[in-house]
Image (cartoon, rainbow, N blue to C red; front, side, top):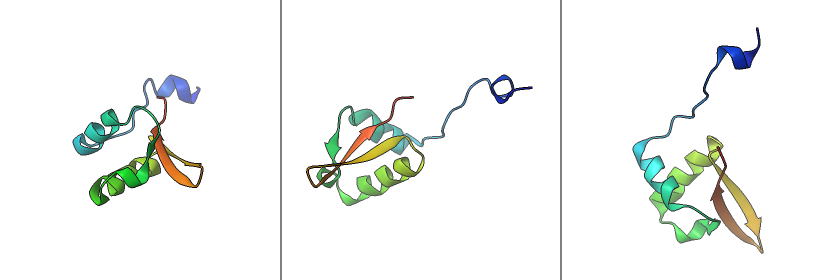
Length: 67
């Protein structure tokens, strides 16, 4: 039996606070534009692989992953 047959849908748990922040990020945004609390939430989403961190012209940018 294949793993795909056992798992019909794969979802990553995201809290309400994470979800509201994730909905506001639609394109690459500088991480420094967020306040400290939002940066902690973004780092949690990076660990969950929901958001990617990108280095662009010596600026750390974040953008949502496709899922």
